[in-house]
Image (spheres, helix red, strand yellow):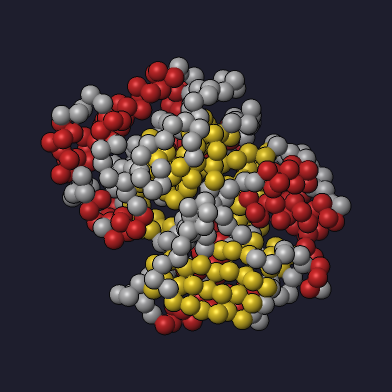
Length: 457
């Protein structure tokens, strides 16, 4: 909506900057200036920020104070010193999270977050407002590479916050619509019979771009291609996020929406890491993060082009620094530059999240993220895995937290599965560990049966 976009850009954001000291656009301008720097200057900027973070962490963060003396002897090479620190796994961080909180911090004044991530392991952590604003700045800069401005109308194929009651959900949707200029279509219950309704809603809203889970966008695109229906409006882009974007998905989405597809790469517990440029390369926001790729078995650093486990060091989260945090993704860095004019380093490959779409017994598609949303609000389970063998037959593996497990949580989870998928049989198994897939990740949502709705009509 042009009027809403104008309001957001010219009135709402300046008011936030004046009254709440929001600095998102300031950080965005910093990133925009940095993207034109030469490689050596970018590396020096990153090392300087890393050194500042190491100064802080070794003095004020209990998990790292034992390295203070060693850091004093290696201050001239912060990137090499970083490799001397242990890799931080999600499980270790989850069990010792209090050791990573900066001394004398008051959690009540920080921004709490919790994510199941792509592995289904719930992880709580804290941020401060500058760190969150830097994430947003990176996202808006990446979108700006494709002509998308703050306040441009957007339709999101996304999940509703299940933990909110009806009144809170209405407030949430009102805020999304009028303060962010976004319309949300649920990725949890895509139904090909409702396709004309979805398209009418999108056409009426006149978005500049779509934004959503890769698999949900792909499912919507496949519905359109099978039905011979088109959107009928011109989009600046379709932005895919939260999962690996496979080539066949990109092709279907581009064909259905007649629009370029942009890949966004980030995580709640890793920040906004990289964005695809118009030339097709994934540029790393090296001003915000320091990335390493290591052998998943030995932890030995790998050369550019070699695929391994990604370690992320957020350069701006001073309230809860996580140095060499193993995000759970498998990637490869690149030594190549890009001809687009953006000089941020390039991420060569991402073998990331493997969310899956499920099919209900009454013909609706349900995004696998739905189950993660349910479990994310429970302390009873360390992790889980749900597998759909057939539309009406599933298996559920649960790794209980022995100190927090409540039978009522398990009943609530099973009820949520039934509510989404219909009258299905769920075989529950309690396990101590869920082994990773070939990519090195534990997939929490797996569909083994064909995603074909027509056979169930």
